Length: 196
Image (cartoon, rainbow, N blue to C red):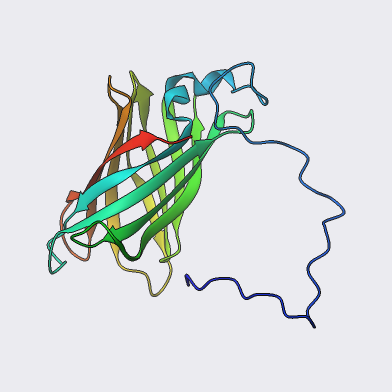
């Protein structure tokens, strides 16, 4: 799943450029002067725009031990009233060296006029979540509305995700999960700093 892309051999020509390249830009900026300008409905989440990275801790009763991980989260927009969301994490050893890729997910957060958020989040492990919640005062709190699983995916029945911007510019992230016959409980927490 995480194998690097194969290199082109001399007998394999590189791909030709698309005759129809995507003509719109995407922005990590909350600056109204940046192109494209953020949609007015993004006001409650403008502080999230950008790329964030940092460290976290994870645990769950079905795992043999707690773990430390690094995480990168990106929020961007294309001028419409939703955020593009992408997150990837990798496990760290006791010396903070990368061990292996861990979680990866992507999706969209749809903002509503009253501050409600409808989030669509997919994972390559066969889990697709629809979460609903609210964005206000630097905090986004999302809880499961529905979960769809592929036939071989691990059974996840509910999650709660909370993103909070602190006064010192840190983005804290907590993730509770109900999975594999366990009740909803703490799974992950991380402290992230803006890198872009």
